[in-house]
Length: 258
Image 1 (cartoon, rainbow, N blue to C red):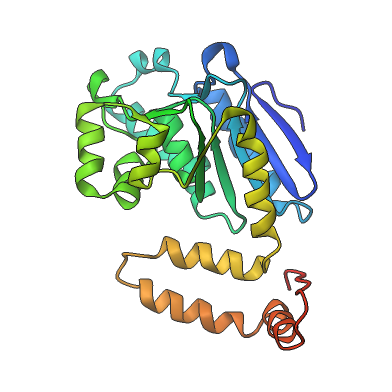
Image 2 (image 1 turned 45 degrees about the vertical axis):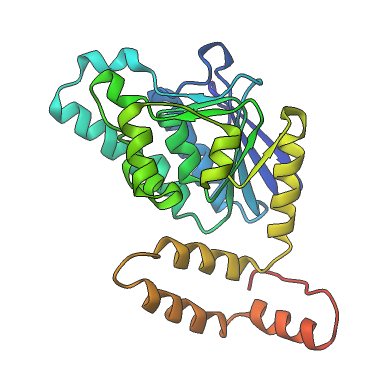
């Protein structure tokens, strides 16, 4: 599968999806979102892929927002459909994936770019990263999950401050408020993302998928019940039997995702 706006690279069980519009600071447009849907769907369906790392080409930007030029032709219905389609085809697809997805934020992650990073399960950033949601400067609000995911990560007050002021956070500030979990120099960003992903991939794939689903249910009315349900289901997996046997036999587990 070939793409115009993405580069796809494999390293072992890790699939890199690189947004490759460096001259446009990797801004999201309709074509890029469509390609992301195809690339992500293929990665999640590929048994040889254990996890995905998303990043942007170059050192200046992860994704510096959406392609604003296309907004002028949209009315209320068009804007609603733009948001709904993005949620369904890309952002929620990532958030609810059964395989781990890490955002390696290299430079600017603004608007839809930050929303893309927030849809990922884990975010790490380079020291030069700048993150923000500037939509109110355009007379808009975040439309790809930003108003929902940002409060979960940084708290309601900080989220409202970021959204209403449109101010950017530095990488250090993002780390302090919990928006990212690690900050590193730009040259170490992908190696660190890879190291983190390899550690995750050494664990049970069945348990990782269940953990993602359970954490996604956090804060909902059925969150605790979902955890109970998924915990119980783990007892029916080969991974659980292997993990317990390995622990009792004092050896490393060899999980098969069964």
